[in-house]
Image 1 (cartoon, rainbow, N blue to C red):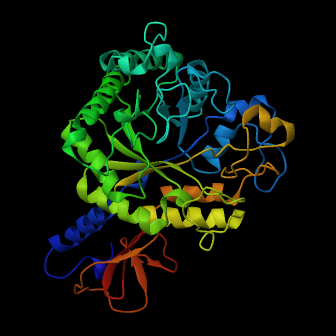
Image 2 (cartoon, helix red, strand yellow; image 1 turned 180 degrees about the vertical axis):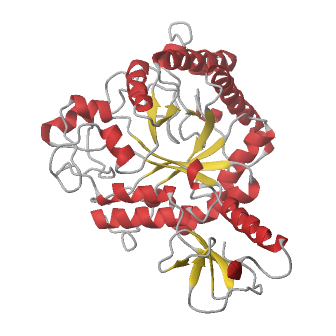
Image 3 (cartoon, rainbow, N blue to C red; image 1 turned 180 degrees about the horizontal axis):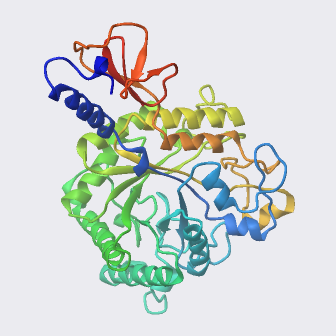
Length: 439
């Protein structure tokens, strides 16, 4: 090291202190290495079976392996897959039974990707409006009214079912790295009647038994995960981003009831939940309430055409329903998420959507136009390639407190080995009388 930039005057230790300080600044923000970027690709095998072709954005030859493509070209390191108990075939998009998920899960793991398993605990979609108990979990000939179904029986079934599924997945070589116990359970899960629901916005004692009921279901699932896949992280998934108080209340209830889980999972769709300012408020409130808890956006998407007719918020002035608008949404979302140290995961929902003539009906009843491939051209959307920015922290320069430097205050910049540099990238530098970092 050259003597003229040996360190800050005043002794031998200050320069070491500078290095330690520089390193500590880098470590204070969420590390990009620990971040998870993925997509829900639950229908990919169904599209493949229907003969649907996937192409790069520029066209040319069809993509031979979509999983490898999203890993190498979109930077993804994880894939999310939903699991239904007993899909009856009435909805072509609800086909993910255990055998289907085992095969897709093994492909995911063989591709070197992390696997997020999303238990719906239902025969069909589980979401804020529907959390129906699987039909195989009760006998209607013996129980003439679901109200008579004993909750103890149900949470025992949650544990047995979760345990059995995880055992098979592990044995098949498809052990999940993350497990969602329930899907969008903002109002609870496994409802018998309306009064089984929880209402996080209320935070009132008279509904405590409903919360205790939910906590026992979650505990039953968590015990299975800890037993069969002890290295997997548990995600509890809600979708009340539009109501920060309800979101915080929900996880406060879970904490008060000692529910075992690792990660807060959120759905965020701008047309249903509001703009990025709304998301920011909710993420800030979660960070304040649960400073040690990671947050994953386990579902997000934006349209590239046909803005949703049921949208609660019209954000087309910010993000037009075009390919360019979808790309801008990704760029803006990623930029916002980098402002929140607690957010360490991001998944695009239904990224594999890729309709086409008669093939569409074999896979999906109608187009949503939120995927990362175009339904008409079958080419990848520009937004696909921008998601990888979530794994790369934006470059910013951080100035250390002013110190007297032995290096002259000129326009020259030097690295920490004393070499003059003409172009700076990421790293530690000395120049202009100060030390600084480019990240």
